[in-house]
Image 1 (cartoon, helix red, strand yellow):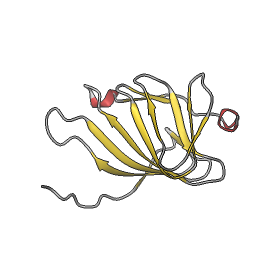
Image 2: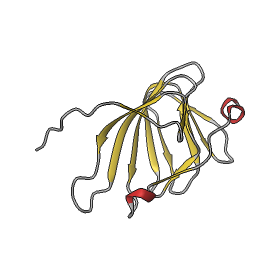
Image 3: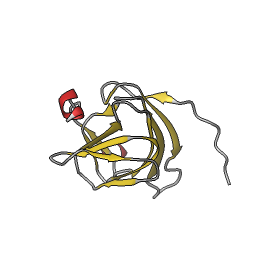
Image 4: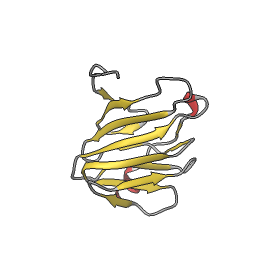
Length: 132
């Protein structure tokens, strides 16, 4: 067994996020063949990711607040604590807090064969699309 030291919370970069978003890593690959990555991500009201996709998909489990999630071409979905959403591999999507609530989720995904290709970041979500 290994007990990890606490890692500092980091603020996510504005190139990939709108508003204030903080990340706490939970799990990461430790040995050959492992791919799982888990992080606790906290969004201030109105904060959100840019459009993006994941090579092996992504699971989001809402732990606090109100989440807004949208797949490209689909309707915006509202999710609440205890709900889990799955975005399949390659599906372009964004997620974030509603306009008037903080939101926290667990983000779970598997690294691609090349970890640098795990997430493909795209353009920012416009205010118009976010509020639609």
